[in-house]
Length: 502
Image (cartoon, rainbow, N blue to C red; front, side):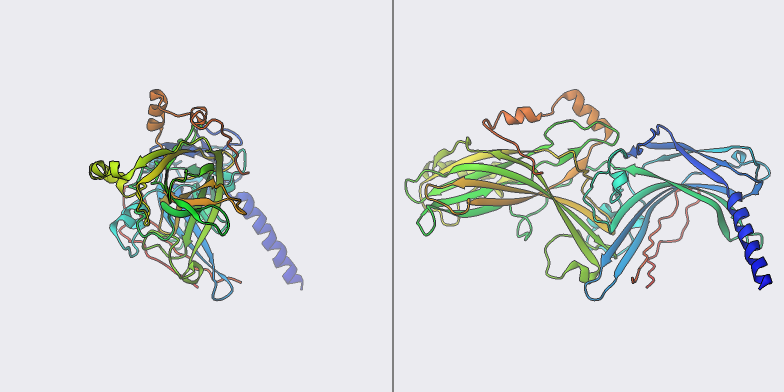
Protein backbone atom coordinates (compact mmCIF):
# COMPACT_ATOMS: atom_id res chain seq x y z
CA UNK A 1 0.00 0.00 0.00
CA UNK A 2 2.84 2.37 0.85
CA UNK A 3 4.61 1.55 -2.39
CA UNK A 4 1.45 2.33 -4.33
CA UNK A 5 1.16 5.76 -2.69
CA UNK A 6 4.78 6.57 -3.43
CA UNK A 7 4.35 5.60 -7.06
CA UNK A 8 1.18 7.66 -7.30
CA UNK A 9 2.80 10.78 -5.83
CA UNK A 10 5.86 10.33 -8.03
CA UNK A 11 3.66 10.06 -11.15
CA UNK A 12 1.75 13.20 -10.21
CA UNK A 13 4.99 15.12 -9.65
CA UNK A 14 6.30 13.94 -12.99
CA UNK A 15 3.09 15.06 -14.72
CA UNK A 16 3.33 18.51 -13.15
CA UNK A 17 6.97 18.82 -14.17
CA UNK A 18 6.14 17.67 -17.71
CA UNK A 19 3.30 20.16 -18.06
CA UNK A 20 5.45 22.97 -16.69
CA UNK A 21 8.21 22.06 -19.11
CA UNK A 22 5.99 22.28 -22.19
CA UNK A 23 6.93 25.17 -24.47
CA UNK A 24 4.48 28.06 -24.66
CA UNK A 25 3.45 29.09 -28.18
CA UNK A 26 1.82 32.39 -29.17
CA UNK A 27 0.50 32.89 -32.70
CA UNK A 28 0.20 36.52 -33.78
CA UNK A 29 -1.39 37.45 -37.11
CA UNK A 30 -0.54 40.67 -38.90
CA UNK A 31 -3.43 43.10 -38.77
CA UNK A 32 -5.06 41.26 -35.88
CA UNK A 33 -7.62 43.34 -33.97
CA UNK A 34 -8.54 42.14 -30.49
CA UNK A 35 -11.98 40.57 -30.48
CA UNK A 36 -12.13 40.20 -34.27
CA UNK A 37 -11.54 37.24 -36.54
CA UNK A 38 -9.06 37.66 -39.39
CA UNK A 39 -10.74 37.00 -42.74
CA UNK A 40 -9.02 36.29 -46.03
CA UNK A 41 -9.89 35.57 -49.64
CA UNK A 42 -8.15 34.10 -52.69
CA UNK A 43 -4.64 35.50 -53.19
CA UNK A 44 -4.45 37.12 -49.75
CA UNK A 45 -1.28 36.68 -47.71
CA UNK A 46 -1.74 35.30 -44.20
CA UNK A 47 1.26 36.75 -42.39
CA UNK A 48 2.25 36.46 -38.78
CA UNK A 49 4.76 35.16 -36.26
CA UNK A 50 4.98 32.22 -33.90
CA UNK A 51 6.71 33.08 -30.61
CA UNK A 52 8.01 30.24 -28.43
CA UNK A 53 9.12 30.51 -24.79
CA UNK A 54 10.03 27.87 -22.19
CA UNK A 55 10.42 27.76 -18.41
CA UNK A 56 13.22 25.21 -18.54
CA UNK A 57 15.81 24.27 -21.12
CA UNK A 58 14.11 22.14 -23.73
CA UNK A 59 15.71 20.21 -26.52
CA UNK A 60 13.81 20.01 -29.81
CA UNK A 61 14.39 19.12 -33.44
CA UNK A 62 12.10 21.37 -35.51
CA UNK A 63 9.22 23.82 -35.46
CA UNK A 64 6.29 22.97 -37.69
CA UNK A 65 4.03 25.78 -38.97
CA UNK A 66 1.17 24.77 -41.28
CA UNK A 67 -2.09 26.14 -42.67
CA UNK A 68 -4.68 23.36 -42.58
CA UNK A 69 -8.14 23.10 -44.09
CA UNK A 70 -10.45 20.31 -42.92
CA UNK A 71 -14.09 19.34 -43.25
CA UNK A 72 -16.14 17.28 -40.78
CA UNK A 73 -19.53 15.66 -41.36
CA UNK A 74 -21.80 13.51 -39.19
CA UNK A 75 -24.95 11.77 -40.43
CA UNK A 76 -27.67 10.16 -38.32
CA UNK A 77 -28.43 6.64 -39.47
CA UNK A 78 -32.09 5.89 -40.16
CA UNK A 79 -31.80 2.11 -40.32
CA UNK A 80 -30.26 1.67 -36.86
CA UNK A 81 -29.43 3.98 -33.93
CA UNK A 82 -26.15 5.82 -34.05
CA UNK A 83 -24.22 8.22 -36.23
CA UNK A 84 -21.54 7.96 -38.87
CA UNK A 85 -18.85 10.60 -39.23
CA UNK A 86 -16.17 11.58 -41.73
CA UNK A 87 -13.20 13.90 -41.80
CA UNK A 88 -11.21 15.18 -44.77
CA UNK A 89 -8.02 17.25 -44.75
CA UNK A 90 -8.15 18.99 -48.12
CA UNK A 91 -5.41 21.58 -47.58
CA UNK A 92 -2.03 21.52 -45.86
CA UNK A 93 0.47 24.28 -46.57
CA UNK A 94 3.80 24.05 -44.76
CA UNK A 95 5.97 27.06 -43.91
CA UNK A 96 9.60 26.23 -44.72
CA UNK A 97 12.08 27.24 -41.99
CA UNK A 98 15.71 27.71 -42.89
CA UNK A 99 18.41 26.05 -40.78
CA UNK A 100 19.87 29.46 -39.96
CA UNK A 101 16.63 30.46 -38.22
CA UNK A 102 17.02 27.72 -35.62
CA UNK A 103 19.23 28.16 -32.54
CA UNK A 104 22.47 26.17 -32.42
CA UNK A 105 22.33 23.71 -30.79
CA UNK A 106 18.60 22.91 -30.99
CA UNK A 107 17.99 24.02 -27.44
CA UNK A 108 15.29 26.40 -26.17
CA UNK A 109 16.61 28.35 -23.19
CA UNK A 110 14.52 29.75 -20.37
CA UNK A 111 13.96 33.51 -20.50
CA UNK A 112 14.50 33.72 -24.26
CA UNK A 113 11.93 34.36 -26.96
CA UNK A 114 12.20 32.53 -30.25
CA UNK A 115 10.23 34.10 -33.11
CA UNK A 116 9.49 32.36 -36.39
CA UNK A 117 7.71 34.41 -39.10
CA UNK A 118 5.34 32.73 -41.54
CA UNK A 119 3.53 33.68 -44.74
CA UNK A 120 0.81 31.71 -46.51
CA UNK A 121 -0.97 32.66 -49.72
CA UNK A 122 -4.59 31.55 -49.98
CA UNK A 123 -4.60 29.33 -53.10
CA UNK A 124 -7.18 29.50 -55.85
CA UNK A 125 -7.38 25.74 -56.24
CA UNK A 126 -6.47 22.59 -54.35
CA UNK A 127 -4.14 19.90 -55.61
CA UNK A 128 -5.72 17.33 -57.95
CA UNK A 129 -4.80 14.58 -55.48
CA UNK A 130 -7.38 15.92 -53.03
CA UNK A 131 -10.24 14.46 -55.07
CA UNK A 132 -9.40 10.87 -56.04
CA UNK A 133 -12.80 9.20 -55.61
CA UNK A 134 -15.09 8.00 -58.39
CA UNK A 135 -16.83 10.79 -60.31
CA UNK A 136 -19.67 10.86 -62.80
CA UNK A 137 -18.15 13.67 -64.88
CA UNK A 138 -15.11 15.91 -65.16
CA UNK A 139 -16.96 18.95 -63.82
CA UNK A 140 -17.22 17.26 -60.40
CA UNK A 141 -13.45 17.08 -60.08
CA UNK A 142 -13.11 20.75 -60.99
CA UNK A 143 -15.66 21.79 -58.36
CA UNK A 144 -14.21 19.52 -55.66
CA UNK A 145 -10.74 21.00 -56.13
CA UNK A 146 -11.92 24.57 -55.60
CA UNK A 147 -11.28 26.04 -52.17
CA UNK A 148 -14.45 25.78 -50.01
CA UNK A 149 -15.46 28.60 -47.61
CA UNK A 150 -15.36 28.50 -43.82
CA UNK A 151 -18.69 27.05 -42.71
CA UNK A 152 -20.47 25.78 -39.60
CA UNK A 153 -18.69 27.77 -36.86
CA UNK A 154 -20.84 30.62 -35.43
CA UNK A 155 -17.77 32.44 -34.12
CA UNK A 156 -16.17 32.40 -37.58
CA UNK A 157 -19.38 33.22 -39.47
CA UNK A 158 -18.92 36.99 -39.12
CA UNK A 159 -16.23 39.32 -37.86
CA UNK A 160 -16.03 37.73 -34.42
CA UNK A 161 -18.01 40.41 -32.60
CA UNK A 162 -21.43 38.84 -33.11
CA UNK A 163 -22.46 35.21 -33.40
CA UNK A 164 -24.05 35.00 -36.84
CA UNK A 165 -25.90 32.07 -38.34
CA UNK A 166 -24.48 30.75 -41.60
CA UNK A 167 -27.39 28.28 -41.76
CA UNK A 168 -25.22 25.16 -41.60
CA UNK A 169 -26.25 22.24 -39.36
CA UNK A 170 -24.27 21.35 -36.24
CA UNK A 171 -23.20 18.14 -37.96
CA UNK A 172 -21.08 19.92 -40.59
CA UNK A 173 -18.04 22.17 -40.40
CA UNK A 174 -15.33 23.49 -42.72
CA UNK A 175 -12.48 25.12 -40.82
CA UNK A 176 -9.05 26.63 -41.46
CA UNK A 177 -6.33 26.87 -38.80
CA UNK A 178 -2.75 28.02 -38.43
CA UNK A 179 -1.06 25.24 -36.44
CA UNK A 180 2.33 25.59 -34.75
CA UNK A 181 4.06 22.64 -33.09
CA UNK A 182 7.45 22.10 -31.43
CA UNK A 183 8.63 18.65 -32.53
CA UNK A 184 11.19 16.23 -31.11
CA UNK A 185 12.38 12.92 -32.49
CA UNK A 186 12.55 9.82 -30.39
CA UNK A 187 16.01 9.03 -29.04
CA UNK A 188 15.60 5.37 -29.96
CA UNK A 189 13.82 5.69 -33.30
CA UNK A 190 14.39 8.86 -35.33
CA UNK A 191 11.40 8.04 -37.52
CA UNK A 192 9.10 8.65 -34.57
CA UNK A 193 8.35 12.32 -33.92
CA UNK A 194 6.23 13.69 -31.09
CA UNK A 195 4.92 17.17 -30.41
CA UNK A 196 6.20 18.81 -27.23
CA UNK A 197 3.59 21.54 -27.72
CA UNK A 198 0.86 22.09 -30.29
CA UNK A 199 -1.23 25.29 -30.67
CA UNK A 200 -3.76 26.30 -33.35
CA UNK A 201 -5.43 29.58 -34.32
CA UNK A 202 -8.55 29.78 -36.46
CA UNK A 203 -8.83 31.99 -39.54
CA UNK A 204 -11.82 32.66 -41.77
CA UNK A 205 -11.43 32.10 -45.50
CA UNK A 206 -14.07 33.05 -48.08
CA UNK A 207 -12.53 32.31 -51.50
CA UNK A 208 -13.31 34.17 -54.69
CA UNK A 209 -16.03 32.30 -56.60
CA UNK A 210 -16.80 33.06 -60.23
CA UNK A 211 -20.19 32.86 -61.92
CA UNK A 212 -21.09 29.42 -63.29
CA UNK A 213 -23.33 28.74 -66.32
CA UNK A 214 -27.08 28.70 -65.58
CA UNK A 215 -28.56 25.46 -64.30
CA UNK A 216 -30.58 23.41 -66.76
CA UNK A 217 -34.06 23.34 -65.20
CA UNK A 218 -35.76 21.36 -67.98
CA UNK A 219 -37.52 18.31 -66.46
CA UNK A 220 -36.10 19.22 -63.04
CA UNK A 221 -38.39 18.08 -60.22
CA UNK A 222 -37.21 20.71 -57.70
CA UNK A 223 -37.21 23.95 -59.70
CA UNK A 224 -40.31 25.52 -61.22
CA UNK A 225 -39.59 28.33 -63.70
CA UNK A 226 -43.05 28.31 -65.32
CA UNK A 227 -46.48 27.83 -63.79
CA UNK A 228 -50.01 27.82 -65.27
CA UNK A 229 -53.14 28.31 -63.20
CA UNK A 230 -56.83 28.76 -63.92
CA UNK A 231 -58.29 32.06 -62.70
CA UNK A 232 -61.78 31.42 -61.28
CA UNK A 233 -64.59 33.82 -60.49
CA UNK A 234 -65.03 32.29 -57.07
CA UNK A 235 -65.75 29.03 -55.29
CA UNK A 236 -67.70 26.64 -57.56
CA UNK A 237 -67.94 29.28 -60.29
CA UNK A 238 -66.73 29.48 -63.84
CA UNK A 239 -63.28 30.46 -65.05
CA UNK A 240 -62.17 33.92 -66.05
CA UNK A 241 -59.16 32.65 -67.95
CA UNK A 242 -55.70 31.20 -67.62
CA UNK A 243 -52.74 32.84 -65.82
CA UNK A 244 -49.16 31.96 -66.75
CA UNK A 245 -46.14 33.05 -64.70
CA UNK A 246 -42.54 32.42 -65.71
CA UNK A 247 -39.04 33.58 -64.93
CA UNK A 248 -35.46 32.59 -65.61
CA UNK A 249 -32.44 32.19 -63.36
CA UNK A 250 -31.42 35.65 -62.07
CA UNK A 251 -27.93 37.02 -62.19
CA UNK A 252 -25.88 35.76 -59.22
CA UNK A 253 -25.81 37.51 -55.87
CA UNK A 254 -22.37 39.05 -55.41
CA UNK A 255 -20.83 39.03 -51.95
CA UNK A 256 -18.27 41.64 -50.99
CA UNK A 257 -14.78 40.29 -50.27
CA UNK A 258 -13.93 39.58 -46.62
CA UNK A 259 -12.79 42.60 -44.60
CA UNK A 260 -14.68 44.92 -46.99
CA UNK A 261 -17.71 46.84 -45.79
CA UNK A 262 -20.89 45.54 -47.47
CA UNK A 263 -22.95 48.15 -49.30
CA UNK A 264 -26.67 48.66 -48.73
CA UNK A 265 -27.53 47.83 -52.32
CA UNK A 266 -29.70 45.49 -54.31
CA UNK A 267 -27.60 42.38 -54.97
CA UNK A 268 -29.58 41.28 -58.02
CA UNK A 269 -33.09 41.29 -59.45
CA UNK A 270 -35.50 38.65 -60.71
CA UNK A 271 -38.04 39.44 -63.42
CA UNK A 272 -41.38 37.62 -63.37
CA UNK A 273 -43.30 37.62 -66.66
CA UNK A 274 -47.09 37.26 -66.37
CA UNK A 275 -49.59 36.37 -69.08
CA UNK A 276 -53.37 36.28 -68.76
CA UNK A 277 -55.56 34.60 -71.36
CA UNK A 278 -59.24 35.48 -70.87
CA UNK A 279 -62.06 33.12 -71.72
CA UNK A 280 -64.05 35.96 -73.32
CA UNK A 281 -63.82 39.68 -72.79
CA UNK A 282 -62.75 39.45 -69.12
CA UNK A 283 -60.19 41.86 -67.75
CA UNK A 284 -57.01 40.47 -66.17
CA UNK A 285 -57.06 40.00 -62.39
CA UNK A 286 -55.66 42.70 -60.17
CA UNK A 287 -52.30 41.73 -58.75
CA UNK A 288 -51.78 41.80 -54.99
CA UNK A 289 -48.31 41.20 -53.54
CA UNK A 290 -45.01 39.61 -54.52
CA UNK A 291 -43.11 37.75 -51.80
CA UNK A 292 -39.55 36.49 -52.17
CA UNK A 293 -37.79 33.90 -50.04
CA UNK A 294 -34.33 32.33 -50.24
CA UNK A 295 -33.97 28.59 -49.67
CA UNK A 296 -30.56 27.56 -48.28
CA UNK A 297 -29.59 23.92 -48.90
CA UNK A 298 -26.60 22.23 -47.24
CA UNK A 299 -25.84 18.74 -48.54
CA UNK A 300 -23.38 16.58 -46.64
CA UNK A 301 -22.24 12.98 -46.67
CA UNK A 302 -19.86 10.52 -45.01
CA UNK A 303 -18.64 9.35 -48.41
CA UNK A 304 -17.56 11.58 -51.30
CA UNK A 305 -20.28 12.80 -53.66
CA UNK A 306 -19.91 11.31 -57.13
CA UNK A 307 -22.28 13.87 -58.70
CA UNK A 308 -23.77 17.25 -57.85
CA UNK A 309 -26.38 16.67 -55.14
CA UNK A 310 -30.00 17.73 -55.65
CA UNK A 311 -33.33 17.29 -53.90
CA UNK A 312 -34.75 14.91 -56.48
CA UNK A 313 -34.69 11.22 -55.70
CA UNK A 314 -36.76 8.70 -53.80
CA UNK A 315 -34.25 7.21 -51.35
CA UNK A 316 -33.83 9.10 -48.05
CA UNK A 317 -30.34 10.55 -47.80
CA UNK A 318 -29.81 9.23 -44.25
CA UNK A 319 -30.15 5.62 -45.44
CA UNK A 320 -27.20 5.97 -47.80
CA UNK A 321 -24.93 8.05 -45.58
CA UNK A 322 -26.10 11.38 -47.00
CA UNK A 323 -28.18 14.18 -45.53
CA UNK A 324 -29.77 17.50 -46.46
CA UNK A 325 -30.32 20.48 -44.16
CA UNK A 326 -32.61 23.22 -45.47
CA UNK A 327 -33.17 26.68 -44.07
CA UNK A 328 -35.38 29.49 -45.33
CA UNK A 329 -34.76 33.25 -45.25
CA UNK A 330 -37.56 35.72 -45.99
CA UNK A 331 -36.35 38.54 -48.22
CA UNK A 332 -39.23 40.94 -48.92
CA UNK A 333 -42.95 41.33 -49.53
CA UNK A 334 -43.99 44.13 -51.83
CA UNK A 335 -47.26 45.43 -53.24
CA UNK A 336 -47.50 45.04 -57.03
CA UNK A 337 -51.07 46.25 -57.49
CA UNK A 338 -49.76 49.13 -59.60
CA UNK A 339 -48.31 46.78 -62.23
CA UNK A 340 -49.86 47.56 -65.61
CA UNK A 341 -51.33 44.90 -67.90
CA UNK A 342 -50.72 45.36 -71.64
CA UNK A 343 -53.24 44.01 -74.15
CA UNK A 344 -52.06 41.99 -77.16
CA UNK A 345 -53.57 40.29 -80.18
CA UNK A 346 -52.28 36.85 -81.10
CA UNK A 347 -52.97 37.44 -84.81
CA UNK A 348 -50.86 40.59 -84.93
CA UNK A 349 -48.00 38.84 -83.13
CA UNK A 350 -47.84 35.83 -85.42
CA UNK A 351 -45.59 37.46 -88.02
CA UNK A 352 -42.95 38.62 -85.54
CA UNK A 353 -42.98 35.60 -83.22
CA UNK A 354 -40.60 33.55 -85.37
CA UNK A 355 -38.15 36.45 -85.58
CA UNK A 356 -38.23 36.94 -81.84
CA UNK A 357 -37.56 33.29 -81.10
CA UNK A 358 -34.65 33.15 -83.55
CA UNK A 359 -32.88 36.16 -82.05
CA UNK A 360 -33.51 35.45 -78.38
CA UNK A 361 -32.34 31.88 -77.92
CA UNK A 362 -31.38 32.48 -74.31
CA UNK A 363 -34.86 33.54 -73.23
CA UNK A 364 -37.15 31.64 -75.62
CA UNK A 365 -37.20 28.60 -73.34
CA UNK A 366 -38.26 30.69 -70.34
CA UNK A 367 -40.37 33.36 -72.06
CA UNK A 368 -44.05 33.42 -71.18
CA UNK A 369 -45.56 31.78 -74.21
CA UNK A 370 -49.19 30.72 -74.54
CA UNK A 371 -50.72 28.25 -72.12
CA UNK A 372 -51.40 24.69 -73.16
CA UNK A 373 -55.10 25.47 -73.62
CA UNK A 374 -54.83 28.84 -75.38
CA UNK A 375 -56.92 29.08 -78.54
CA UNK A 376 -58.17 32.66 -78.46
CA UNK A 377 -56.97 35.90 -79.93
CA UNK A 378 -56.57 38.35 -77.03
CA UNK A 379 -54.19 38.08 -74.11
CA UNK A 380 -52.52 40.40 -71.58
CA UNK A 381 -48.95 40.58 -70.30
CA UNK A 382 -47.28 42.23 -67.34
CA UNK A 383 -43.76 42.26 -65.95
CA UNK A 384 -42.72 42.52 -62.30
CA UNK A 385 -39.14 43.23 -61.24
CA UNK A 386 -38.24 41.75 -57.84
CA UNK A 387 -35.18 43.18 -56.04
CA UNK A 388 -33.13 40.61 -54.14
CA UNK A 389 -31.26 41.96 -51.11
CA UNK A 390 -29.69 39.71 -48.48
CA UNK A 391 -30.52 40.45 -44.82
CA UNK A 392 -27.70 41.45 -42.50
CA UNK A 393 -28.69 39.20 -39.60
CA UNK A 394 -27.43 36.12 -41.46
CA UNK A 395 -24.11 35.16 -42.97
CA UNK A 396 -24.05 33.83 -46.51
CA UNK A 397 -21.24 31.88 -48.15
CA UNK A 398 -20.74 31.35 -51.89
CA UNK A 399 -22.28 28.41 -53.68
CA UNK A 400 -19.78 25.55 -53.59
CA UNK A 401 -19.38 21.80 -54.00
CA UNK A 402 -16.71 19.80 -52.16
CA UNK A 403 -16.10 16.09 -51.69
CA UNK A 404 -18.17 15.84 -48.50
CA UNK A 405 -20.28 19.01 -48.52
CA UNK A 406 -22.22 21.31 -50.86
CA UNK A 407 -24.14 24.57 -50.46
CA UNK A 408 -26.78 25.64 -52.98
CA UNK A 409 -29.50 28.30 -53.04
CA UNK A 410 -32.90 28.69 -54.66
CA UNK A 411 -35.29 31.63 -54.88
CA UNK A 412 -38.97 31.14 -54.07
CA UNK A 413 -41.35 33.73 -55.54
CA UNK A 414 -45.08 33.92 -54.89
CA UNK A 415 -47.46 36.42 -56.50
CA UNK A 416 -51.05 36.86 -55.30
CA UNK A 417 -53.97 38.20 -57.31
CA UNK A 418 -57.60 39.15 -56.73
CA UNK A 419 -60.73 38.00 -58.57
CA UNK A 420 -64.18 39.59 -58.61
CA UNK A 421 -65.83 36.72 -56.70
CA UNK A 422 -65.29 36.07 -53.02
CA UNK A 423 -62.36 33.78 -52.24
CA UNK A 424 -61.80 31.84 -49.06
CA UNK A 425 -58.07 31.68 -49.78
CA UNK A 426 -56.02 34.25 -51.66
CA UNK A 427 -55.05 32.68 -55.01
CA UNK A 428 -51.29 32.49 -55.43
CA UNK A 429 -48.85 31.42 -58.13
CA UNK A 430 -45.50 29.98 -56.98
CA UNK A 431 -42.15 29.83 -58.77
CA UNK A 432 -38.82 28.39 -57.65
CA UNK A 433 -35.67 29.51 -59.43
CA UNK A 434 -32.04 28.44 -59.09
CA UNK A 435 -29.73 31.23 -57.98
CA UNK A 436 -26.00 31.40 -57.33
CA UNK A 437 -24.14 33.32 -54.67
CA UNK A 438 -20.62 34.24 -55.71
CA UNK A 439 -17.81 36.10 -53.97
CA UNK A 440 -16.05 39.00 -55.65
CA UNK A 441 -12.33 39.51 -55.61
CA UNK A 442 -11.03 42.73 -54.07
CA UNK A 443 -10.11 44.06 -57.51
CA UNK A 444 -13.64 43.46 -58.85
CA UNK A 445 -15.17 45.08 -55.78
CA UNK A 446 -12.99 48.17 -56.19
CA UNK A 447 -13.78 48.35 -59.91
CA UNK A 448 -17.53 48.26 -59.21
CA UNK A 449 -17.18 51.04 -56.67
CA UNK A 450 -15.24 53.23 -59.11
CA UNK A 451 -17.61 52.65 -62.02
CA UNK A 452 -20.58 53.32 -59.78
CA UNK A 453 -22.91 50.84 -61.47
CA UNK A 454 -24.69 49.92 -58.28
CA UNK A 455 -28.47 50.13 -57.92
CA UNK A 456 -29.59 51.34 -54.51
CA UNK A 457 -32.66 50.09 -52.71
CA UNK A 458 -34.25 53.56 -52.92
CA UNK A 459 -33.92 53.52 -56.70
CA UNK A 460 -35.64 50.17 -56.89
CA UNK A 461 -38.47 51.36 -54.62
CA UNK A 462 -39.27 54.12 -57.12
CA UNK A 463 -40.49 51.47 -59.58
CA UNK A 464 -43.11 50.19 -57.16
CA UNK A 465 -44.95 53.18 -55.67
CA UNK A 466 -46.97 52.75 -53.55
CA UNK A 467 -45.01 49.87 -52.11
CA UNK A 468 -44.06 48.37 -48.77
CA UNK A 469 -41.14 46.05 -48.09
CA UNK A 470 -41.65 43.87 -45.02
CA UNK A 471 -38.83 41.50 -44.01
CA UNK A 472 -40.19 38.44 -42.25
CA UNK A 473 -38.79 38.43 -39.46
CA UNK A 474 -23.30 5.18 -28.68
CA UNK A 475 -21.86 5.85 -32.10
CA UNK A 476 -20.00 4.18 -34.90
CA UNK A 477 -17.60 6.67 -36.45
CA UNK A 478 -15.91 6.40 -39.81
CA UNK A 479 -12.87 8.64 -40.28
CA UNK A 480 -12.15 9.55 -43.89
CA UNK A 481 -8.72 11.16 -44.37
CA UNK A 482 -8.00 12.47 -47.84
CA UNK A 483 -4.84 14.39 -47.02
CA UNK A 484 -3.17 16.08 -49.97
CA UNK A 485 0.58 16.19 -50.39
CA UNK A 486 2.19 19.11 -48.60
CA UNK A 487 3.26 22.23 -50.46
CA UNK A 488 7.01 22.04 -49.86
CA UNK A 489 10.15 21.71 -51.82
CA UNK A 490 9.82 17.95 -51.65
CA UNK A 491 6.36 16.71 -52.67
CA UNK A 492 5.40 13.36 -51.26
CA UNK A 493 4.61 10.73 -53.82
CA UNK A 494 2.07 9.10 -51.56
CA UNK A 495 -1.44 9.25 -53.05
CA UNK A 496 -4.17 9.97 -50.48
CA UNK A 497 -6.27 6.98 -49.62
CA UNK A 498 -9.73 6.63 -48.16
CA UNK A 499 -9.37 5.12 -44.70
CA UNK A 500 -12.38 3.87 -42.80
CA UNK A 501 -12.63 2.47 -39.31
CA UNK A 502 -15.84 1.31 -37.71
